[in-house]
Image (cartoon, rainbow, N blue to C red; front, side, top):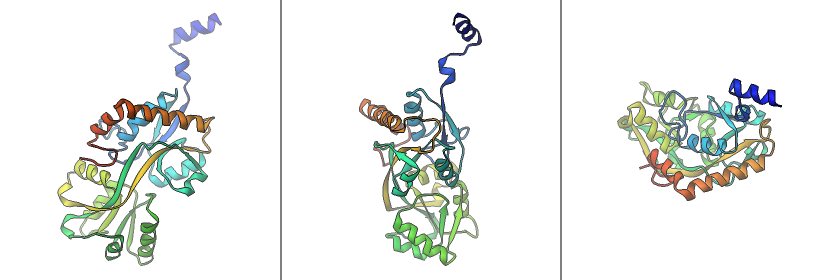
Length: 259
């Protein structure tokens, strides 16, 4: 035992060196997730994840994946954790926490000079639609998208920047696309195209997002215990004021509304 402890001291290893690493998705989803090397700040959700996962003694391994690949890897267990809005069908392959990490308004963007007007979902039938593959839509919107797809009026994309490019291209590929309104505001400003894009006031839904664990995770033995500890950490952040400080860093004055 003395020899083992001496070896650990000499080599610089400790018990912390052997912490289990959990695999998480790292997507371009401002202001909630910023991929490494793209932004000085990690993103609102990543800051909370970093605090409340490492507090349980785990390391974090972020993997850059598109949305659709994230779903596949959460199903297989190649990803241990992701952040999802609640959909009953997802409960087959993920377990949900109870406390929301954040709440996001879900709406539409168009090119400013197109003079597009959206006051209800029915208005979408007038326009070609840009669909970010893997993005979760409300049932009503999903039905409209499928109707439009059958008529050849949907263009799919795999990256928010590429979607903005297709919207602003000449000729443009589509007139309207959907996402979190906070994501539209952030990325348009980062790309220097805020004056070219209109983010509409009409909101489809206000969606809370939760920590979820793959039911096939090989690295988390007690899923419910992990979720309970994470939820308590999140509650502690909110009661201490630290959560509000993180929101403020990303321009939020409440859990859902950016300034």
